[in-house]
Length: 428
Image (cartoon, rainbow, N blue to C red; front, side, top):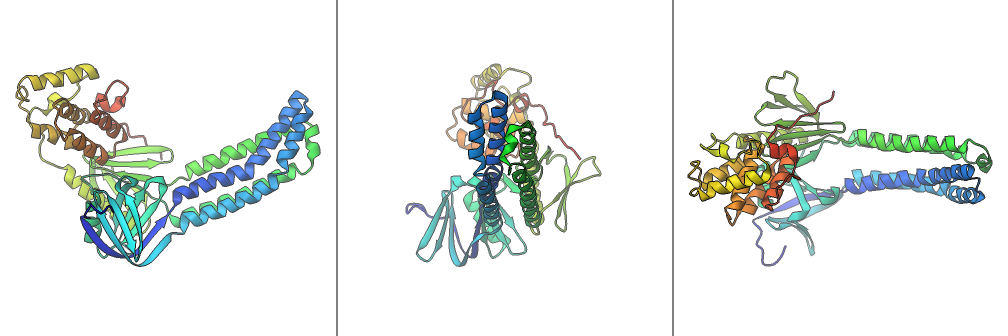
């Protein structure tokens, strides 16, 4: 941490671990390309040689296929390294001094120190069991775990970093280590079998003098599509908890749950149950041990903060009501020139309340952001960015960020600018 910056919170952790699932996914892609690439490229060159009656392509195909066995072995190696990188954490045991502040996080063990800028930390969550720790999501898919003495200590660490429920949303991948390990090994096994058959197809280079090469090329292309599709469908569920609601992202669907429709948040073992108003069937999510309880606590706290008082009188004037962005901005400007918000009875505090009111319509919050920018409030950009960082609604966050830069126009997210409710798409 820079010498001029004093940390707002310090603790001593007995265990700090980091995982690199993002790097693991990159290695998985390299494994697929290494094992299938030479075969697919060779088959395509052979098919072109037959179609164009060109011996050059046949020679090129033989040269490429000569690397197929080496590529297959490299693919297996990449898959094994991916497995190790994804599921084996790099652990620092022993006393690690952790200093957290608004500018970032510093980890010190003896003479060694590591500095993580605040901009590199995406979100954080206190996980109470089996041992209390703070799970931090870093950019690049990295994950950092800092063991703490209690949940209160973990909450203070997050607050020092500005990652509390009032300041920033949290995005969590509900992956199961056991399921991911099984899926990885099954993927490697299937790949070995399929690539083995493909190698057998091309053992005899005389295949390129008949018309079966094109058919075998199609089989290989189907295998590549199957591999990418299976990895996409097997992608873990992602849960985003914001100041205004919860977003559940499954491989083939997205479900938006504003706090106004959530009537109960429960846990049952390793399952998180989100009960909606008027729906007897809850949204059920499975998480690792301890994570379900941590998410339930975070959602309850965020929902409690979202259930603020009644909206101030006159804030409806901030809503778009069918106007194009230029006319909307001009009418907001007239509110100012009419006498410091008195035309509608609004005060600066009312406008700030509308910006932070997570139960308000999206266009009202965007109107409040625009009015703060039009009024030239010095801290307007910071206030708007804090509101944007805390929301789980991706479109609303994008619109608020554009409003913070005073760049909201017709190119901004149409659903949010129009104020229409988000469509929750569910399957199964």
